[in-house]
Image: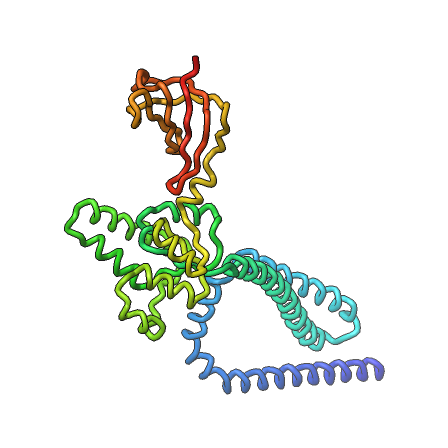
Amino acid sequence: MKLKDISFNEVVVTSVADFSILVLFVIIFGLIFRIFAPALINKQKKAASYIEHDLKDVSIDAILIDAIGVVIGLVVALIISMSYRSLLPPLWYSVITITLYFVFGFFGFVVASAKVKGHRKILDSRALRSHEKINSGTPKVIDTSVIIDGRILDIMRAGFIDGKIIIPTFVLDELRHIADSSDNIKRVRGRRGLDILNQIRSEFNVEVYNNTAKLRHLDGVTEVDVKLIKLARELNANLITTDFNLNKVATINDIKVLNINELANAIKPVVIPGEKLLVDIVKHGKDREQGIGYLDDGTMIVVEDGAGHISESAFVTVTSVIQTSAGKMIFARINP
């Protein structure tokens, strides 16, 4: 009977102690919540907007990885909590277990987020190196003739031009002037040039060079070609053009020139003497017996004794190939 009384008293004391700890825990938590609740409530909308904004930049993969990290942390906490379950009173077990779940869940989230950020930094660094590689080439200044010509867009799309593309404001002014010309042909060419320019600016890294301080000394220069040469020299840039005369003047001034016409000639198929071709002869040549035909790439072929085959297709044999400033000229004769 005495042993039973002692056992009962111990149970009562233990229950009172556990209840006191629970009440103390609730009071402390209530005080903390009471202190921070106003600030949390006032910033609730702002925090929600921040979270919404941040989540827009977070990929589904990152969210899944973070969730997996949290789950792993909770599983670890569960395994640990099972090891001391029989050693603690229920109240203490609950408090410690909740704390353990929170700590390990948060730790799993932090580790997973760090892995995601590390992977993202690697990808960003690769993208940055790729971007720097693209823009590490010599700057290129393009003139009005290149924009109107239009082939520069396809060349850039093919990836044959590296470095920054620079379009001076005086080139834009000249292009707008051509687009507003009273001459119908010039007006069409100018508007086509503006369309090409808009496509280039939307697809590639193009700088419209409008530094007034650096261009001020060019205000007294009336010739656009002279301005281009001086600007290319100051920027240590290459000049892209289709203008034959500008090409020559820039070369004299030790400026590297990339001529679109020369590039087009360089990539034309090579034709050698003795090669046989099928040619459409379309008109008479300078000499009475000559006929003129063209290859698919626009190369002109002068056909000896071709005058009698105008508007016909004929097999010819190449006799010689001449390289001129305007391109290649092929001479051939009708096959017997």
